[in-house]
Amino acid sequence: MKSSIIIVIFFVLGIFLGYFIDESVFIFNDNLSTYALHFLLFLIGISIGADLKVFKIIKKLHYKILFVPLAVIVGTLLGVAAVSILFEDITLNECLAIGSGFGYYSLSSIYISKISGEVLGVVALLSNIIREVITLIAAPLLVRYFGKLAPIASGGATSMDTTLPIITRYSGKEFAVISVFSGTVLTIIVPFMVTMFL
Amino acid sequence: MNTVLLFLILGSLVGYIIREKKSLLKHLDKLTFWSVLALLFLLGFSVGRNPTIIQNIHKLGFQALILSVAAVIGSAIFSFIVYKLFFKDIKADEK
Image (cartoon, rainbow over all chains, first blue to last red):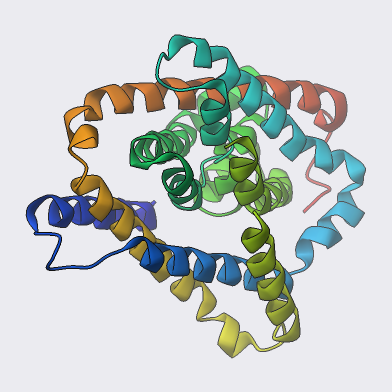
């Protein structure tokens, strides 16, 4: 949570600088963020390659654990597709792309702003931050009404790190492994799914 | 799309090679965090230069809220089905 706040502070700092400083002073062109994005993907790759416990979890918990991230994908896409009719200026595919961030706001919003422009990128950023916040706040309610997998599903890609403590607290520590697994799978597929819909 | 795959695969190969070098991997989280900070700062910077966003931030925030609530409810419902089918009798035997 603390790191999320720092990230939001940097985002807001960027907004202020962008708003007040003349463009010619700082040349933050598109290439710079593209390089940073590729670097981030490379780093995510390293953490996946260095830590193969995800595959051990599949072995240990059997194939049924695969249904958890699958439920998150299907549920999220159907959910955002249902509300897409409310928006005049956001298409179904754009809604699906925003939903495919699964709470991984940094990566998804940057892809979406690159492909579809910054307006949609901001909706994606806010939407995926809100998803994380809802999970942190509503975890006990989600467990009560939708069972112990619900906060894991709500957390999406964040269930492997930022929302893991709260999930473990309300679903029980026997769900921690499932949570890490689901979050890892979703984190890996975010860039593919987001770009697939746009 | 292809560059995504390229950098992820390249990274995981490097990660697999250095998986025993804990001293190197210790810095990975920090480096990842800093690149996320840099990216969000850059995104903020271009948002700040975009008057359309600044003027419509209420509307965009409301749209974002609707999308996230829908995503949470949708995935919670499907996770409930999976829970009832496969995970109902999971006890503390898994760690």
